[in-house]
Length: 327
Ligand SMILES: [Zn+2]
Ligand SMILES: [Zn+2]
Ligand SMILES: [Zn+2]
Image (cartoon, rainbow, N blue to C red; front, side):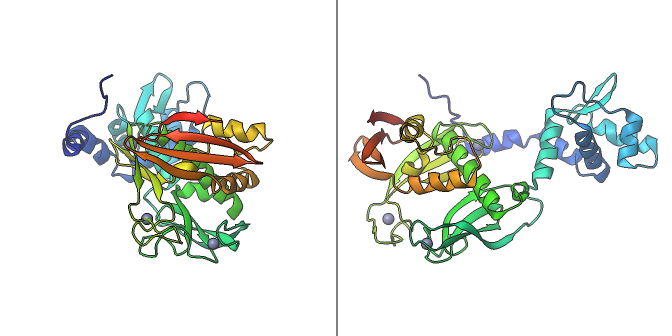
């Protein structure tokens, strides 16, 4: 089959995206009243409701604008691109929904931080309590005892064990444990999509590859690659450059054969849950997955999952597809 991925220069692709109608669309939004109109339409919007339109007079009331003449002018500017007009009034188009969702999620808008807050889970490497911290729109899990999994030079809080992109809206939960579980579950799902070749951000095709440290020092954090794991998977979206990385043994945790292996032994590893206990158990089991380089040409890595004396082995190729399963 022909490779469906775009082959042109990424700059050309970016130039296409930045052509005049996109610039015009962004210009339309640089006005307080227009943003208020989008937010007012969104407030009135009910998922699964019929119609979802708002009458002109109601919209004018909600936005609390003085003169209807000027208000119509702003509303007209949004029509077509972000707002749709029907016989009953106005409603958001998909593009309008996306803009409002980005505003609600707080992406790139507010500098939200959360100082390290201890959670009811311990570091699997040193046994000391873990904490969560939020900065740069990432939720970090940090160890209060050891140096974590990353070298000190990286732009991560010290002692970082895991760090995942997480929208500020994700912090709207009542406990640090709930925030931790939601962020971890979201990351697991994103890794699963990336492993399947789908960008969780833009739906574009993802390139997966495996990197093996050539001079790995497995005693703590390697001075050559700056990581604890010798074998790492990497994903890069060929369209939006969204990227991720992690040991393949971790990222196979939601593979159907792995989920089934644990389920057959009475262990639920949280295929679809933000339950804190389940997420912690899943993470603990993940750390027991061994990964081993079995050949370099072709590149093959074997991930071994063990439970109660039983083993499941999955062999993956250079693009992290599972090519063999040995039970
Ligand atoms: Zn630790
Ligand atoms: Zn290394
Ligand atoms: Zn993408």
